[in-house]
Picture 1: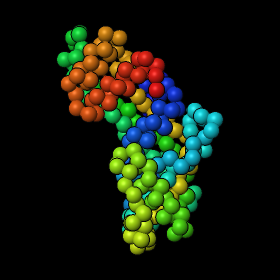
Picture 2: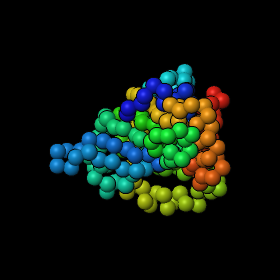
Picture 3: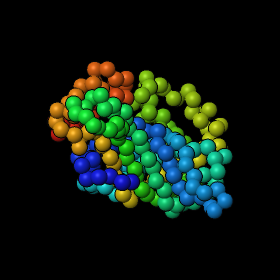
Picture 4: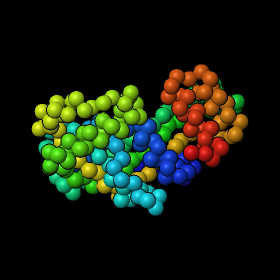
Length: 217
């Protein structure tokens, strides 16, 4: 992942927050010569984060699962290296927001990439635990605290088709490209436009721009 110095995240907590707010990740692994690389979109949740606040999240673990019929799952072996890519808020920046001419359009965006090692989970009970943990986290963050108790039997029936895994991070990096290359006046114009006239994701970009300016998480 190419990250110019001016766009690097100010703190590792920004990466953790981006993952939690945008849990649908893209898992990428190598395939064989015939298939080429594999990539699957799937929800991923944090399992364990380093207590020392490691700058690159080395040693952190995440949990995910996919359909066992997926060719990517069939190619996975414990110890397989992979990349998890998380896309955060993003928005097109029109030159009409710039006070000078000539200028060029661009795109403000946020994203994180985690490199690491994948370990497949073989135990039915541990796979069920991953599914339950995923439901608990996502329902708490995005749902209405649905009580899954009455559906555990259903979970067990579909469990043979579920492939769960643990992803151990070796390195993490993120880009928060938020008009840092522009003057304070231009950044303010872009931010106010997104906050006032934008849809949900533009307003989220404006939120990050404000927090970056104020040095807050």
